[in-house]
Amino acid sequence: MGFDGSATSPRRRTWCFTPRLPSGPSSDDDPHDLEEVRHLVGTHHLGVCLRVDEPYVYSLSDSRTLLEQLDAVGLPVDRADLVLDCGHLRDVREALAGLTGPLRHLRDHDWHSLTIAAGSFPGPEFFDGRPRERVLSIPRKEAALWTHVCRRWPGLGYGDYGVDHPGPPSDGLRPDPNLRYTSAGDWRFHRQPKDVKGGHGSFHRLCRSLLKSGDWPLEGPAFSWGDQQIALAACEAIGPGSGTQWKAYSMSHHFAVIVAVLDRVLPGTASAADVR
Picture 1 (tube, rainbow, N blue to C red):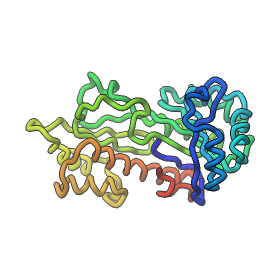
Picture 2: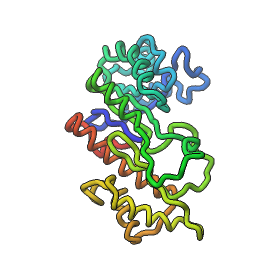
Picture 3: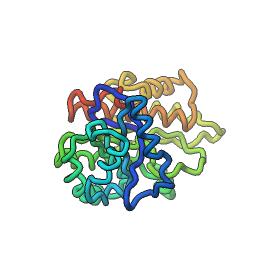
Picture 4: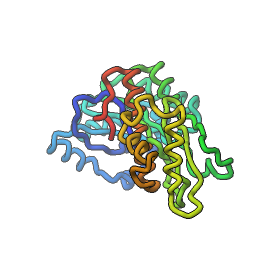
């Protein structure tokens, strides 16, 4: 998960574990025994982060199981950050309906923070057989979900998977030069065909095209480290890099966009320190 925009200042150390749910993983599947968690949080004065994964998020009929496990590790609820991870988001309305029941009872407790997380960047199969548009708009469903959630239940934190698909990694094929460029409500997927001579020299052309587009931020290279690198690549001051670098530039821009959006919605609650 790429970003947790919850209001968790001052920063504190937490130990993350997946709670055992009646319909969820068995104790044999849980990598952290609760006694070990109890020892760690007691010895190092840690809080905890409870992450409930999809589909168990939507089947939380009450808060009792979570509270019992907090009691087992010796922590009050106000020292626990709770993340409801909706995983890959297919339908915003369905997810919103599924969260309604759990949030009714979860919000009755004084969690240190309560965050809704999801991701909707498509997997490789989304692009198979599509015309190879130079720029493709892809809706950010997790942004739409969080907007609806905040209207109904103000004060919840935001989390996402950045510019990655929440599922298994791709098969390792070398992609066309691309940038997954985040805006408030969409990704703008910029790409160029691979260099006919091999390598990824066309990434320079891709960056020049982005700088001339309406997607380039008004702040220019100052918007994020990633945008600085894109501007340098546009004038060929740095090499074209590889998929790893392209994703790093896109993630840096993504973090900057999310911080800016959250600061407009919840002034003073989002900062670079919340990016992790």
